[in-house]
Length: 142
Image (cartoon, rainbow, N blue to C red; front, side, top):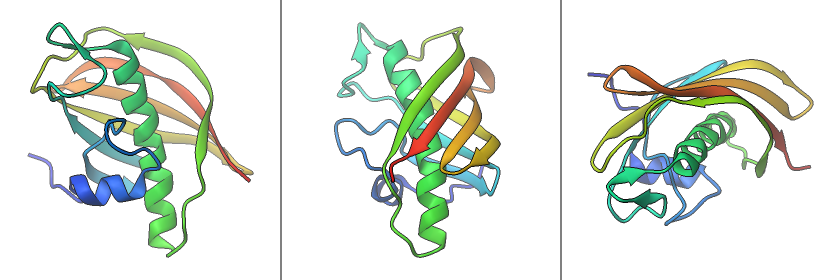
């Protein structure tokens, strides 16, 4: 079992999104170039339909995992994190959709960071099985 670094309330304080739009509820590891986040899917989720967590929710979870990396980076420097936006999403593959009460984990790997633009690789797993992956480019608001 991985060690929980940040739980739900601490994670939510680092994200610009607020309930019911929060798709990350834990952080398991952090470094300058990577992060592992988690999310437990509940029936009150806005991206939950017919016992399934939808593609849009999975992609939003991936994007918020990137936002959590940025938010935590700024938190460590005692600075307020700027709002970030998804600049582009590339080659997203969704192999399987999680169900109610599943807990997913995403590993974010920073590939490049320059002038407020970050290129990341994100892999999402369910019970150590890869269920989604892709690349995202995020841009910090000036």
